[in-house]
Length: 148
Image 1 (cartoon, helix red, strand yellow):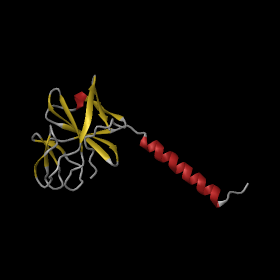
Image 2: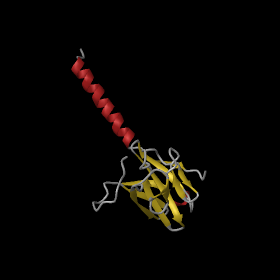
Image 3: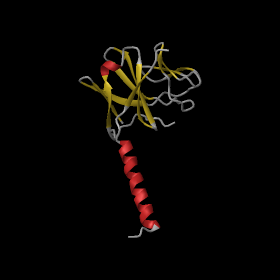
């Protein structure tokens, strides 16, 4: 049996597609923030999917937790009050860096010093002039779900 170039190329493309789809099926990996752009805006359209982020107890009051969903999307979940969770696209609206986390009750971007409100995502200081993209979040029992 001889394998021509077309058959070999078809096999390579099919294998690459299978690996790409398998990589997309991985779960979100939580990345804790320390105490030390494509923006998803609000829309009237229903979310395309939901993503289990982790346990609500992982996010302490006054802090935040980052969850890498894909190479294009990292979600920052904040907890400004005991029963209040907020979720934002973690991409800074100034220069596209991923925000560092929550420090001194503000979301901080380490690239150029932008700071955002943990409850609204609105810029508080620094070079950013627009808010972080809001993402709908739901608490179901002990689990946090992002509706994206």
